[in-house]
Length: 470
Image 1 (tube, rainbow, N blue to C red):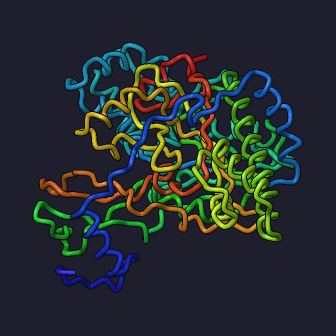
Image 2 (image 1 turned 120 degrees about the vertical axis):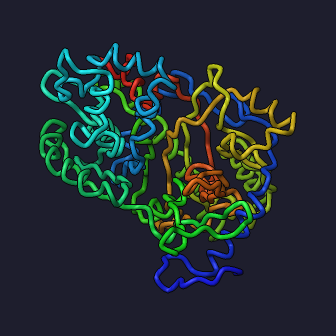
């Protein structure tokens, strides 16, 4: 390493820093994209009969299993309110926000008077003298108003999660939160937990984790030199949501649902979402049952060629992985973590989603694609589905032991982004995305789910949509 550092107090080693510098200089590998996944070619569509069969069988399947709801909730709400900060630069969104402000769940808490200017109203929303939403995580924003209460997004996550993650009258929730917001989130949930346990007639266990400092990353300037802070310390930044694979690795459950904190609707609009969550969970358990049966056979005996062919067909048709009818290779392909992922129709929105990469299916972000290549651009434009982050994960093997999820990351699928620091352009490194390269070597199954199950709140104005209104 050309820069001499005092790394004794850093959470990352000199070897890791050297590797990160090389990654930033050289960039990620180019993915070998084959084609977008479509229904019948990498994505399965459930018939009504199949959907109902999975949903009806779900409760029996989860009996005796441990289930956890894993929600990345460390994101700040700043982006939700970007157009309020920008004002005139985003006048359309700002005007909608002000014109329809009574439609927000937090309206009454603002105590707006007839004399308040637009600037004063915005300050009441964002400023520390008001609701302080400019400094809070998305988890702590009031999302939905009911006759007798206002629910923050994290409250609504509890209500939805209990409906399908309850086993033996117990639900485990895990939220990843930032260190700066840890206290306020924990205080809030401690205050409301008994109310929701009584309402939902369920014991709710909540655990938390923060992004590990050992997953922080360095930055380089335009001359490919390490960037330092004003006080002389090395600049280290959080390594993106891909860092959370290490938080997920600490979980100990048979079935883990992963869903973003801002993708949540009002309680009365949740039944269809819950139905598809149960279907995805049941699909995972059914697949695991077959996988575990095959693995036990493969481990204990020499399997006949006809049976090996059957297993290889299962891997190709159900797990979307190309494999030969070889006992050792089949064992290796089956003995991996498995995830079932809901996929939503694009409806004209091109972006990251399900693609065939090499000999298997992956979730690929547009930032991972070389859009200078006409054939890659055509693939993106012809993609039929996108990724709503609707995952059900199995992280244990056929003997009930936890996989080490770090073993299944593709480390070459990191992201390099341009940012500014102290007025200068810098290159920053983000680890392979949680549902992208961090899970690249999992067995992956894509199932089509309706767009009605996807209602993210990317800007605060999204809360004016029907899914969030009484």
